Structure formats: structure tokens, C-alpha cells
Length: 466
Image (cartoon, rainbow, N blue to C red):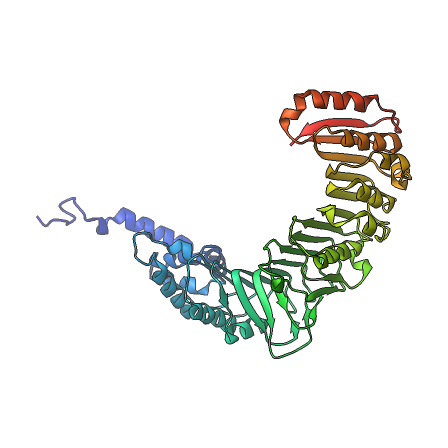
């Protein structure tokens, strides 16, 4: 009797009719799916996993090359036991992927690199994908510093179909080949660690972005001779972060960035200092906007940076909401030069000088909500001699004290607001820590607070802690 024959009753795994029949059923099922649906499903997978489907059958061997999205991450190729950690395998994979998808319609390209890779190879990959495809979404993240080659940056600025651009680098220099840059379809920009350097041209760098909705930069430098003009009529959100300290005065950049014809809803600046003047071409751009100016304390900050911060706040006189942290930038003399914030209804401050707080209240006649993270110690005679701001008598409804320690000057300010705040509906005190909640200091604070004469007929007074 022959081993493995039908008569013996024993079959090798390769001849198992049940498994073979089941595999055929799965293959028949997937083959019934529309080709566009299969392509869409494969495009949702990381490219490494999409390529793995080529082992399903002969018909699937090159189906993955029609995907519209390439998602390449070297971490997925990391092999600790290998001497190179799998880097060479990743390089070979990317090279072969770009070669085989050359004739397909790739619309989205994502390249994430945690490990150091030869810069010339990176530039080759970027140039290749941008020149061969009509890329709509470009995402490149790298933890190493590098410089775009001439071919790479020219390919980038010629990518007229881009809708989303996300570049995140440790540091990266990109030369601007022309001073007039136009991206007709670009909707979202997110840049991190990029330095844009002027090429042979001279003057203002003009960015024309008719469909742009969000502009976000983190630790970026615009090293253009005169400045940068951003014309984006649909722009709703600007976010600029500069949380990397300059190494020296020479590293601080003075090139201005000016925004034109925007329809802003939110503006955010967060960092140690504003090293570049940020200008809104028209006060109406900031009308009804939410402005967030969050400044970290920097001991070596110069007066020029302080002037930039003050000038930026000045531009939001039509804002509906302002969140201004590190209001130490403001002093009593320069508060006097602030404009009227005639549209302001929500004001949120960091640690604040009482003189500054009163100055802002006097310039915010329709303010409804006031919140601050602390009040610096002040001479209590200041409140006795001040004119009552209009908003306390006709508009202010909610006051929130944060970081309360039960100090006498905190109680003094609370008393002033309770007595003068005719329209108050709620006053909240957030204690600096939980332990204070049961301390005698806070119990005495509450007792005195509730004994004060109140300007309002009824309001909720509440205590909590972070």
C-alpha cells in the first residue's frame, strides 16, 4: 500500500482537501469584491502589511502595488538580534516599494524614521515620490538632522496637488527656490524643526494659500531677508510654538510673519519668547477670535521680545476670548497703552499683578467671565482708591480664582469683586492643593468671605481643588 494514497486513509498536510477547499472559498470570496474596494482596504494598512497579502495567492502577488497610500515606518522593521537592527531591510523595502508603485496613483505618503539613515538616500526617496506621483498628503517625521537637497526642495515646492503637509524633524534646512510660493489645494500645514532659508531671490517670501485652514509651526525659523507674507483667505487656526530656548542672541530671529485676509477663529502662541514679530494685517482678522498667548518664564529674555509680546496682545482688541499666561510681560505703565477690548467676553490670565488685572478690567466693558491662576501680593490701598470698572456693574457674571492659598491679598481682591460685582452669578475658588481643603487657613478664609457685604442679590460661591 502506498503511503499517502487515498486507499491508505493518510494524507500529507499539502493534500488536505478540507483546508484546500477552505482556502479556495476565501479566495473566491475576496475575488468577488470590487477591485476599488480591495485597493481601498489595502491602502488602510501599513505598507509592510499590505505587501504581506502577496502570499495569499498568485492573483494577490502584485495587487498591493495599486494602493493609494504608502505608510513606511522603520520601527516596524526593527530586529534587535540583527547587527544593523533591520535598517538595511527597511532601506531595501522602501527602494523596492517606490520602484513597484511607480506607475500607480499614490496620493498619500508617510515616512517615519527613528533611526539614522543616510541623508542622500532620504533626499532620493523624497524626490522620487514627489516627482513620480501627484501627492496630496505628505508626512515626513525624522529624529535626525538633515538638509533638503536641491532636487528635494524643488520637488516639494512643485507639488501643486498637496492638501496636507506634515514635516517633523530634529532640525532641517529647506531652501526656498522662489519668493512667490503658491499651493492651490493646501489645507493643513504642520511644521516642526524646519528652517526655511532664502535662495538666490531677495525680499519678502510670499505664501499664497487660498484653501489653507490651519497653519501650525513648532520651533521653526523663517530666515528670509525681509519677512514672510501669508495670504490665506480661509485660514481659521494659527498655532505657533517656540519652546526651544535660543542658544545665543544671534539665534533670535527678527524676520516678521504677516498674515493677510484671514478668517481667524483661534490664534495660539506658546513659548519662551516671541523672537519674530507676528502681525495681523487688519484688526478685523482678529474679530471674535479666541487668542491664547502662553509664555514660559525666561530669565534671559530681552526687552525686544517683551515688546513683541506686548504688540501681539495689542492686535487682539477685537477678540472675543483671550487666554494670556505670564502677564508679567505687562506692567502698570504699558497697560495704560492697551486699547479697549470692546468685544472681549472671556479673559483668562496666569499669575497676575493686581494693577494689570484692574487695567484690563477697565478696558473690557463687556467682560462676562474672568479667570486667573494667581494674584501677586499688592498694596490693599490700591483697591480703595481705584475707580470701579464698568464690567463689574453691568456685565461680569463668573469669576474663577485658581491656585488659592488663603492669603490676605487674595481675600482682599475677592471682597472687592463681591462688593462691586452687581451682576455676579458664580465665584469659584480652586485651592492650590487638596490638603488646604481642611486647613484652618481656608476655614477662616471662608468665614470672612461669607461675612462680606455682597453687591449681587444671589450668586453661587464654591470651593474645589485640582
